[in-house]
Length: 114
Length: 108
Image (cartoon, rainbow over all chains, first blue to last red; front, side, top):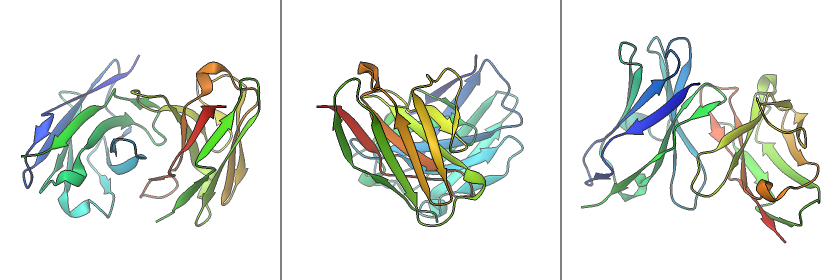
């Protein structure tokens, strides 16, 4: 069965770039949308954006100027970069497959703090 | 951007009771591309309903979705202890996907 696993630093300094990778196992990364979604503690879900396996992207306009997503089909991975982070970017970050999201990673907490 | 408003914010019910959750969109959700997710503390959300009314794989039939256009409903016919959780709606009809604020179903 398909599994997703987020990886990356759990602590990022303000103004720096948050970088996360999602590794997909049990299935191919091809022919699907892959999304990043985040959730600050005690709050709702925020869709960050998505990338199709062939590389086309859609980003949330509220984050678009700071977001870059990429996909590496040879490694069955896709990635998120969020630049110029601030405390408001502290959240659990999830990677997911599909629209709607049928498969989710377990989530990774990223804290922005000096 | 399609804004989704969920109500109520919190629903206090007893096991065995019926739960009715609402998700209202600021504009019509084309193709009824509306999904519902369940989230328990410390866990990732789980897809329950897609296309407004289709149950995802493995979801019990006590969960049902209905609605079209701008008004959607998730109904849990008889609450089981494991159903007490937060429920999120999401529209995926546009290139900007959005979520509602969530409804918490708590034990009364």
